[in-house]
Image (cartoon, rainbow, N blue to C red; front, side, top):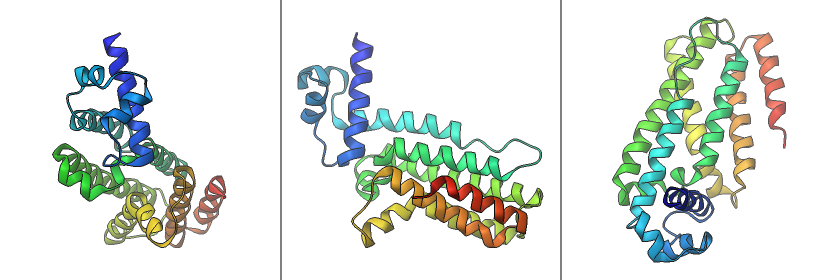
Length: 209
Protein backbone atom coordinates (compact mmCIF):
# COMPACT_ATOMS: atom_id res chain seq x y z
CA UNK A 1 0.00 0.00 0.00
CA UNK A 2 2.82 2.40 0.88
CA UNK A 3 4.57 1.71 -2.44
CA UNK A 4 1.27 2.20 -4.28
CA UNK A 5 0.74 5.59 -2.62
CA UNK A 6 4.26 6.66 -3.55
CA UNK A 7 3.61 5.69 -7.16
CA UNK A 8 0.32 7.61 -7.21
CA UNK A 9 2.10 10.69 -5.86
CA UNK A 10 4.68 10.52 -8.64
CA UNK A 11 2.06 10.01 -11.36
CA UNK A 12 -0.05 12.93 -10.08
CA UNK A 13 3.03 15.13 -9.72
CA UNK A 14 4.15 14.37 -13.27
CA UNK A 15 0.74 15.28 -14.66
CA UNK A 16 0.58 18.53 -12.68
CA UNK A 17 4.18 19.48 -13.44
CA UNK A 18 3.61 18.90 -17.15
CA UNK A 19 0.43 20.96 -17.12
CA UNK A 20 1.39 23.84 -14.85
CA UNK A 21 5.17 23.63 -14.37
CA UNK A 22 7.04 22.77 -11.19
CA UNK A 23 7.20 26.33 -9.75
CA UNK A 24 3.41 26.71 -10.06
CA UNK A 25 2.53 23.37 -8.46
CA UNK A 26 2.30 23.04 -4.67
CA UNK A 27 2.56 20.03 -2.39
CA UNK A 28 -1.05 20.59 -1.29
CA UNK A 29 -2.25 20.52 -4.91
CA UNK A 30 -0.50 17.21 -5.45
CA UNK A 31 -2.08 15.78 -2.29
CA UNK A 32 -5.52 17.03 -3.38
CA UNK A 33 -5.06 15.43 -6.82
CA UNK A 34 -4.94 11.94 -5.30
CA UNK A 35 -7.15 12.71 -2.30
CA UNK A 36 -4.62 12.20 0.47
CA UNK A 37 -3.60 14.49 3.29
CA UNK A 38 -0.46 16.65 3.01
CA UNK A 39 0.85 14.76 6.03
CA UNK A 40 0.49 11.44 4.20
CA UNK A 41 2.35 12.91 1.23
CA UNK A 42 5.13 14.20 3.50
CA UNK A 43 5.54 10.67 4.86
CA UNK A 44 6.68 9.62 1.36
CA UNK A 45 8.34 12.83 0.19
CA UNK A 46 9.52 15.41 2.71
CA UNK A 47 9.51 18.28 0.22
CA UNK A 48 8.77 19.02 -3.42
CA UNK A 49 12.46 18.70 -4.31
CA UNK A 50 12.31 15.01 -3.35
CA UNK A 51 9.46 14.48 -5.82
CA UNK A 52 11.31 16.36 -8.55
CA UNK A 53 14.45 14.30 -7.89
CA UNK A 54 12.49 11.03 -8.06
CA UNK A 55 10.90 12.00 -11.37
CA UNK A 56 14.29 13.12 -12.67
CA UNK A 57 15.69 9.67 -11.90
CA UNK A 58 12.80 8.06 -13.80
CA UNK A 59 13.38 10.45 -16.71
CA UNK A 60 17.05 9.47 -16.86
CA UNK A 61 16.21 5.77 -16.81
CA UNK A 62 13.69 6.18 -19.64
CA UNK A 63 16.11 8.40 -21.59
CA UNK A 64 18.80 5.71 -21.49
CA UNK A 65 16.38 3.31 -23.22
CA UNK A 66 15.75 5.81 -26.02
CA UNK A 67 19.28 7.17 -26.49
CA UNK A 68 21.18 3.92 -26.91
CA UNK A 69 23.41 3.88 -30.03
CA UNK A 70 21.85 2.58 -33.25
CA UNK A 71 22.36 -1.07 -34.05
CA UNK A 72 25.47 -1.83 -36.09
CA UNK A 73 24.93 -2.56 -39.76
CA UNK A 74 22.90 -0.75 -42.39
CA UNK A 75 20.79 2.04 -40.95
CA UNK A 76 17.51 2.98 -42.64
CA UNK A 77 15.41 6.12 -42.65
CA UNK A 78 12.75 4.14 -40.80
CA UNK A 79 15.29 3.42 -38.04
CA UNK A 80 15.91 7.16 -37.72
CA UNK A 81 12.18 7.88 -37.77
CA UNK A 82 11.52 5.41 -34.95
CA UNK A 83 14.31 6.93 -32.89
CA UNK A 84 12.86 10.41 -33.43
CA UNK A 85 9.37 9.14 -32.60
CA UNK A 86 10.50 7.62 -29.30
CA UNK A 87 12.53 10.72 -28.41
CA UNK A 88 9.50 12.95 -28.90
CA UNK A 89 7.37 10.56 -26.86
CA UNK A 90 9.92 10.81 -24.05
CA UNK A 91 9.86 14.60 -24.24
CA UNK A 92 6.07 14.61 -24.11
CA UNK A 93 5.99 12.29 -21.11
CA UNK A 94 8.39 14.55 -19.17
CA UNK A 95 7.44 17.86 -20.69
CA UNK A 96 8.15 19.74 -17.44
CA UNK A 97 11.87 18.96 -17.74
CA UNK A 98 12.19 21.32 -20.70
CA UNK A 99 9.80 23.97 -19.37
CA UNK A 100 11.09 26.72 -17.09
CA UNK A 101 14.49 25.12 -17.68
CA UNK A 102 16.61 27.86 -16.13
CA UNK A 103 14.42 28.07 -13.04
CA UNK A 104 14.53 24.31 -12.55
CA UNK A 105 18.27 24.15 -13.10
CA UNK A 106 18.88 26.92 -10.55
CA UNK A 107 16.65 25.39 -7.90
CA UNK A 108 17.21 21.66 -8.43
CA UNK A 109 20.87 20.62 -8.94
CA UNK A 110 19.94 17.07 -10.01
CA UNK A 111 17.73 18.47 -12.76
CA UNK A 112 20.55 20.70 -13.99
CA UNK A 113 22.94 17.73 -14.23
CA UNK A 114 20.32 15.51 -15.85
CA UNK A 115 19.49 18.11 -18.51
CA UNK A 116 23.15 18.70 -19.36
CA UNK A 117 23.74 14.98 -19.80
CA UNK A 118 20.50 14.59 -21.75
CA UNK A 119 21.32 17.40 -24.19
CA UNK A 120 24.79 15.99 -24.82
CA UNK A 121 23.39 12.48 -25.27
CA UNK A 122 20.71 13.68 -27.70
CA UNK A 123 23.32 15.50 -29.79
CA UNK A 124 25.60 12.44 -29.79
CA UNK A 125 22.73 10.13 -30.74
CA UNK A 126 21.74 12.34 -33.66
CA UNK A 127 25.37 12.38 -34.83
CA UNK A 128 25.50 8.59 -34.80
CA UNK A 129 22.17 8.24 -36.62
CA UNK A 130 23.02 10.82 -39.29
CA UNK A 131 26.46 9.30 -39.81
CA UNK A 132 24.80 5.93 -40.20
CA UNK A 133 22.44 7.35 -42.83
CA UNK A 134 25.41 8.82 -44.71
CA UNK A 135 27.21 5.47 -44.63
CA UNK A 136 24.04 3.73 -45.82
CA UNK A 137 23.79 6.08 -48.77
CA UNK A 138 20.68 8.01 -47.74
CA UNK A 139 22.33 11.34 -46.95
CA UNK A 140 25.16 13.27 -48.59
CA UNK A 141 27.38 14.98 -46.02
CA UNK A 142 30.97 15.01 -44.81
CA UNK A 143 31.79 14.68 -41.13
CA UNK A 144 31.65 18.44 -40.40
CA UNK A 145 28.29 18.49 -42.19
CA UNK A 146 27.03 15.59 -40.08
CA UNK A 147 28.10 17.34 -36.87
CA UNK A 148 26.47 20.61 -37.94
CA UNK A 149 23.23 18.91 -39.00
CA UNK A 150 23.11 16.85 -35.79
CA UNK A 151 23.51 19.98 -33.67
CA UNK A 152 20.75 21.79 -35.57
CA UNK A 153 18.44 18.79 -35.31
CA UNK A 154 19.15 18.48 -31.58
CA UNK A 155 18.34 22.17 -31.06
CA UNK A 156 15.04 21.77 -32.91
CA UNK A 157 14.20 18.62 -30.96
CA UNK A 158 14.91 20.14 -27.56
CA UNK A 159 14.31 23.88 -27.87
CA UNK A 160 11.96 24.72 -30.75
CA UNK A 161 8.84 24.55 -28.57
CA UNK A 162 10.24 27.33 -26.39
CA UNK A 163 10.79 29.45 -29.50
CA UNK A 164 7.24 28.73 -30.68
CA UNK A 165 5.90 29.79 -27.28
CA UNK A 166 7.65 33.16 -27.73
CA UNK A 167 6.25 33.90 -31.18
CA UNK A 168 2.88 32.21 -30.75
CA UNK A 169 0.47 31.49 -27.91
CA UNK A 170 1.88 28.02 -27.37
CA UNK A 171 0.37 24.68 -28.39
CA UNK A 172 -0.65 21.35 -26.98
CA UNK A 173 2.10 18.77 -26.45
CA UNK A 174 0.91 16.58 -29.33
CA UNK A 175 0.72 19.51 -31.76
CA UNK A 176 4.17 20.69 -30.67
CA UNK A 177 5.65 17.23 -31.28
CA UNK A 178 4.13 17.16 -34.76
CA UNK A 179 5.76 20.47 -35.59
CA UNK A 180 9.13 19.34 -34.25
CA UNK A 181 9.08 16.09 -36.22
CA UNK A 182 8.13 17.82 -39.46
CA UNK A 183 10.84 20.44 -38.98
CA UNK A 184 13.53 17.81 -38.41
CA UNK A 185 12.52 15.69 -41.38
CA UNK A 186 12.39 18.83 -43.53
CA UNK A 187 15.84 19.91 -42.39
CA UNK A 188 17.30 16.62 -43.60
CA UNK A 189 15.70 16.76 -47.05
CA UNK A 190 18.39 18.95 -48.69
CA UNK A 191 21.02 16.41 -47.58
CA UNK A 192 19.08 13.42 -48.88
CA UNK A 193 19.42 11.53 -52.13
CA UNK A 194 16.43 11.77 -54.46
CA UNK A 195 14.97 8.45 -53.29
CA UNK A 196 15.61 9.25 -49.64
CA UNK A 197 14.03 12.71 -50.00
CA UNK A 198 10.87 11.07 -51.29
CA UNK A 199 10.87 8.71 -48.30
CA UNK A 200 11.34 11.63 -45.91
CA UNK A 201 8.30 13.30 -47.45
CA UNK A 202 6.34 10.09 -46.92
CA UNK A 203 7.42 9.92 -43.27
CA UNK A 204 6.44 13.55 -42.80
CA UNK A 205 2.86 12.69 -43.79
CA UNK A 206 2.58 10.85 -40.47
CA UNK A 207 2.80 14.30 -38.87
CA UNK A 208 0.30 16.12 -41.05
CA UNK A 209 -1.78 18.63 -39.08
